[in-house]
Image (cartoon, rainbow, N blue to C red; front, side, top):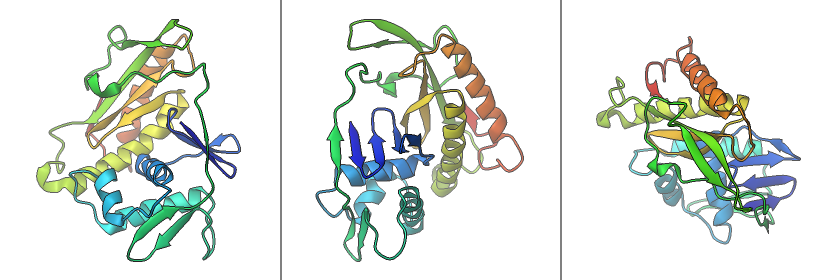
Length: 236
């Protein structure tokens, strides 16, 4: 589904928001926050509902949500004391108030395969091939890259949910930049990891090679100085 408000286009199929054709760089939770507010724009969404939807089964304070809201307001150009898109109703919640037009998906695109059945393990160029059917009844091959935090990550156990949440936030921020660098699309994310596709919706003959390079690049990125939150906490 494509939602158009002002000069912005929110494309839920491609998992991206653009401004005048330029894709915005949004952290996963910030993007999900925008999607949820737009899809529920007919009502005020309570803060408790947003916390439950964006961080299910994870303890998250108001500060985290406020940070996401601040980033979202900056991304959509909210300035001053009179916001034009996201209204805050003190004690009640938030509401997306900008006029929204809904556009159908282009006929040439079909829904991407569900990533929930994909295993989180070492990428195999042969096994990573998935089949994507287009609306013209033709098929093309794509490569799926599944990534997650290691289960035995120090400080990321059940007793340290906030530590694991911080690691995931750092990983997603880095992952978005790396996947875009190789023209990959993140189609799914959760509190454990994410799945990205290469070769769809944009077709590339070297989609296997792109996925492998992206995996290596992301691994190197999280192991660089300054990436300690996710260092040694990633496998793909």
